[in-house]
Image (cartoon, rainbow, N blue to C red; front, side, top):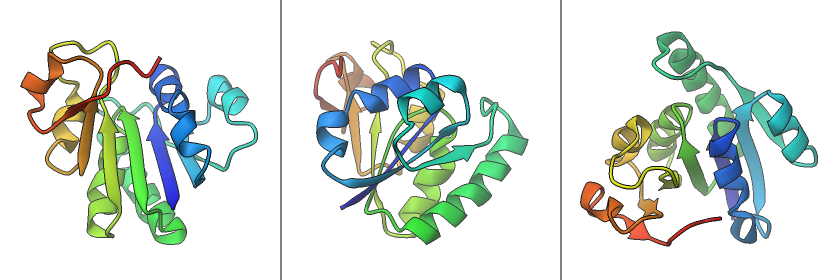
Length: 149
């Protein structure tokens, strides 16, 4: 199985990295910001840099949509996993069109309110994972796996 891990740098990337027991046994590629923390953490991984800032930036959304199209068509991942933020949206939309499965993991610091990215990808994701039982009221089809930390 080929996995595409998509997320902003910082906390979102840390959340994705904490899923290492799952992704380390699969062929994978990463899509994240070209920032010091990402370069350090993913130095031995296959990484495609995405455009930022993404939060409420139409310009970055358009650029990342073209990037998602190129990456997904070239790499053909079976599964897309993301913890956000906005860079996940075009990957989930286009991934769905191209037949990839997707999992969205809502971040740990959201206990009873959804993120904007979570609200946008909820209808598209094949699986939503939350880290607090309270979040199942926000995302009824979610699975609570507890903390990834």
